[in-house]
Image (cartoon, rainbow, N blue to C red; front, side, top):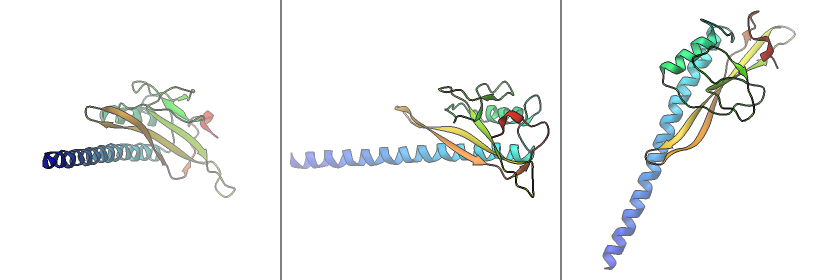
Length: 161
C-alpha cells in the first residue's frame, strides 16, 4: 500500500512539471511569433517613412501583413495612440478607452535644432498566452520603435505628441 501511495505522488509531480513545461513552451512560441510580426510592422513603417492612410499606404500594408499571417489578437492601447479595429479598412482611429485594437501606433517627436522634422513611431501588437484545453489565459503586448525618420508632408499630422 505504501508503494502505491508513493508512486501516485511521484506521478502527480511528473504531471505538474509537464504542465509547467508545456505552458512555458506555449508562451515562448506565441512570444516569438508576436516578436516577428512586430519587427515586420516596424520595418514597413521605416521603409515607407511614416504612417499614412488610404489605398497602398503603410496602414494598408500593415493590415494586409496581419491578415496574411492570420493575426487575430486584439488588445487595449494606451491613451494618445492610434489603433486599427478592422483589418479590412486602411484607417487608423484615435484610441478610445476600453476599446480593443489589432495594433497601435504612436508618433513621437524626435526633432532637434540640428535636425528638425524628425519623428519616431512606436508600434504595439498583442499576443495571447493560451494553453490547450484551458484556453486563453492572458494577453500581453510587444512594442517596437522605429529609427528616427524624416516626417513627410502627407503623414498623419494629428498623431504628433
